[in-house]
Amino acid sequence: MVGAGAVGSSVAELAGEYGHTVTALADSQSAAVDPDGIDVQAALDRKSAEGVVGGGDVTDALDGSYDVLVEATPTTLGDAQPGFGHVETALERDRHVVLANKGPVAERYGDLRDLERASAGTVRFEATVGGAIPVLSTVEDFGPSHITAARGVLNGTANFILSRMAAEGLGYEHVLAEAQDLGVAEADPSFDVEGTDAALKCVILANVLAEDREYTLADATVEGISDLPGSALELANEDGRTIRLIGEVVDGEVRVGPRLVPEHAALAVTGTRNIVQLETTNAGQLNVSGRGAGGPETATAVLADVDRLPE
Amino acid sequence: MSDSRDELQAYTVRLELVDRPGELLRALEPIADNGGNLLSIFHERGNLTPRGHIPVEVDLEAAPDRFEGIVDALRAEGINVIQAGAEVYAEEVTVLLIGHLVRTDLSDTLDRIEDSTDSSVEDFALSAPENTDGKSSARLRLATQSGETDAALATIRSIAAEKDFRVVEPLTAGGGA
Image (cartoon, rainbow over all chains, first blue to last red; front, side, top):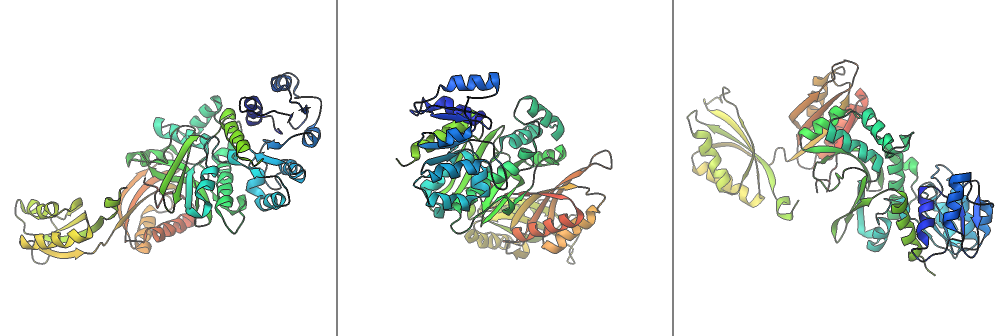
């Protein structure tokens, strides 16, 4: 386990319940390592008390004994480091990798697949798109060639803000402050409200759906919601519609932006809920929705991936 | 949207009515009786045709195979159908515009949207802030010709880019579900 934030610590806490042993838990400063299984609670307690999970460092964790590396460090753009390097080390040791970190799959998908091909290990990344919602495994089950388009609400913070603005007739700044008080939005909300986070998820979807090309964030057309006035939501509402930050992967294009949707459309989910809608060739439209963020929620997607790995 | 509803098409019928009480109702009955679903009626009272009749424009939805029956039924009632337009405007699209709409000459914006997309503004609502510096929002419903919605949206996008306002577009294809 590398990464001890909300998702990483939830994975570590839940791993036992799912029949797994955590042999190492590392954050950016420190690591607790034990080939027979670490005491997860003690490591997390030490992190909150002393700021470190153990006496080792991340290199000790990566060089230690494990079958699967769970990479849950914060998403970084560009070269996707240090997450990408962690994945590289594990694959070179022929270990499997399960990612919760979006960077390597959104920004360096081709490099990642090259490393995977050269390794006996397998890479999975369900947790990177839509939190607990089984989006990528559904795509995998249907087969990417049977899916003609994907669209959805993939950022809970932006969706919370838009739903509150529409329901209460409040302005953006007011609702953002409320979301920050509730812990729904970060102190610096730009990653969410400018559409970057939703775009990364769409880029990952596009990479999985595409047969012949690689996407990065630079290929996405992205618009955020921070300059939407409350009056726009009111006008939409008068007409039985609402505005949602929608990400789309259609005809090889990745696009994220505020869109008008009918008020009672499946895509008009409220609050922090996420939804993904797939257009399939033989089965029409398929909607999957649920919690798109949160430690334990996202951890379930990581642990499901661990169970999907080959031996 | 269910499959049967997908088969409905929008049609525009232009009628000439004699200026007599009950005439409009008499014209609408054959539409409903033959499976047509009325969408809107534009009754141009005070605007007479050269023959001294009142022009009425009726938008309706019907399955293509029923539409001919509707026109026949109207004519059988002695109603003058001057244009049983194959769907003049078959699709509708609603967009929001956000920005300095008034300052950038709103009527020019609307004229250009109508002219360059060959569409018709059916509904328009503006919400302007009290202070002139703030951004306005507008909701615009356009009727476009069949298959022209994407082109109309592209045109609106380019006018918006030029005048520096934002467009909140609808989701097309399947977004209504």
